[in-house]
Image 1 (cartoon, rainbow, N blue to C red):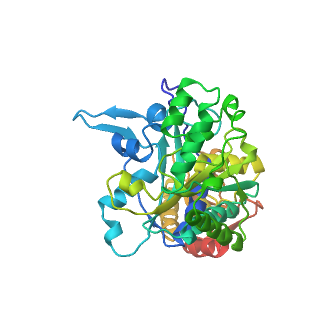
Image 2 (cartoon, helix red, strand yellow; image 1 turned 180 degrees about the vertical axis):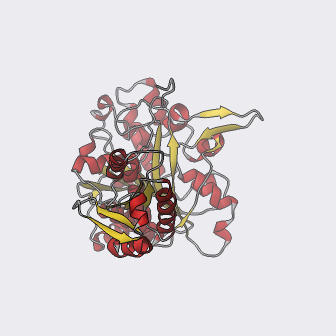
Image 3 (cartoon, helix red, strand yellow; image 1 turned 135 degrees about the vertical axis):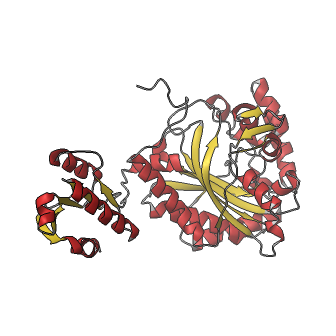
Length: 420
């Protein structure tokens, strides 16, 4: 027994469960690849200042949850707590926005880290697939991303998720709402930390999950009542485009996002089968983030969907993914000559794209066939000295139990034919 264990709040992905996680990542990414989004990968750590500026210095992520450290060279770095700031930084650094084809459409997949109280659906290390469309202000772009996320979830077989939609306004109308909300919050019975948060970013108080806070927010002013005409028109077009695409959503005037960079369109995917951690993904428009981190004005929109949460949602609905078999053919040699022959045939099958495995180590027939069964292979190739003397091997159908002899030179063609 190893004396080491995975750190608290983390998990190891191991077969066979890891196959489901890979399938979820692939399903989320597939609609993006078909819609002009190119893959981007950024470092697992960035400058602390990138997240302090972009995510917000007063956010819980930056003040309480970020894994920050100082390198031997004196640089202040942090494990990435979210993906958007890193992806935008990478696009700006590479001058992708100057290539003349806006928006820059990118998707990514990776691990993220936040120091918070571990519970089901909330980990200190978690996996996301995300998408960002950088450099264009267009309601159709917001609608596209919502539709693609909906398509990804439905392709997995999820049905009981809900899409919540709201607008957070812009630099013209949000300050008016902010002042009205601050006046309201100052009259509530809130603790000092929450009152301090209300002075810095009052919208974040609306996102406070504590019941003692939420009970006092019933009469809070709603942002939709303060939207300027431009934001109202923009939001209405997003709603119309999503509706025309057959995507069902719910207007949620109290929906806010916990990060400072969001403007206008904001949305969240929730699944009621997950209990308190009901959000499986979310995103929105962040028109000012590029300028916050030192870039030019680049209105943008994006989302991130949690792989861990999506797997939990599948389990809550009882959805089992139809995963391809990890092994189609398993070779069982019963002599040294058979080992060399079958290993060569397995190698040939693999080169042709057939998933194939081999009984490694010295094993008897009974033990080797147990390994073949555990592999999930559809067919087993079995050969001993007598078989090779006759120029044949035994091909066993692991589902029906039927076994037949085939010529050594017919192995590859026969299996290709049977496996289609």
